[in-house]
Image (cartoon, rainbow, N blue to C red; front, side, top):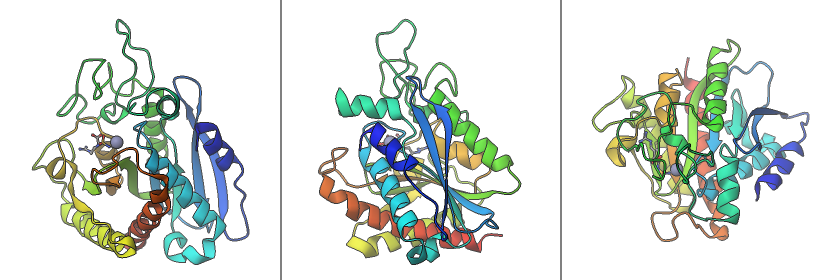
Length: 299
Ligand code: 0X9
Ligand code: ZN
């Protein structure tokens, strides 16, 4: 779906007796597009919640397709997803980088970054997953505006990262909400990446719990279609990244923080064929179910 179709889909959602859908604009992109969050809740007494965002990297189209599929599935059949929905609210931002996404849809399929103008350069955008205010400018980042991993001139220089950061801070500060997990949807590589991601060999005090959830989620995922995921810290399994949203969510107080690198391993890469959208989404739903089960067990 294009940006406008995703917006139409979100704004066309309706609450029912079984599920309440709330749509909120949490920000505006550099080029003026809406950044939209969808809240799903099956009970007003819920406090526990899971936050999900998708498509922070413009070319990772499978991620917004999966986020919208999950929303549609839960809103259409809430009673069939009681293990996902009972006692847990969802805050889902299916398209956090709409400008980059539309550029990838229309001009450059391999576009990754935002689309902001960089003073003194003809190259646009910064890597939004290098732009968060934790370990900003650390490993795996660049100060060169033309680089695909340009961190931006300062943390939260981008309206898209500012919108997400403000949203995270608002949810964390809200005493009626207890966000226990943050999932940021990326592609590709079939990886379940836990904190810390800024440097190899660094582990939070609850590392074992992150890993046990990673094991449970990726095993449940593999049961659907046999797709194998690797789990471990972002920096140990992949590479160190400063200023990424996963570590920022963790340091902001969200217990479980995961970068999910979806299909595939390297056959089609970012240009995943459409016939893989639903199988990918179904196996990701199985992983989300495990996150919900874990979140329900937390104090
Ligand atoms: O480099 C990234 O931002 C992510 N990979 S991607 O191919 N989708 O661009 C991985 C980020 C993992 N998180 C950290 N290492 N902090
Ligand atoms: Zn990515």
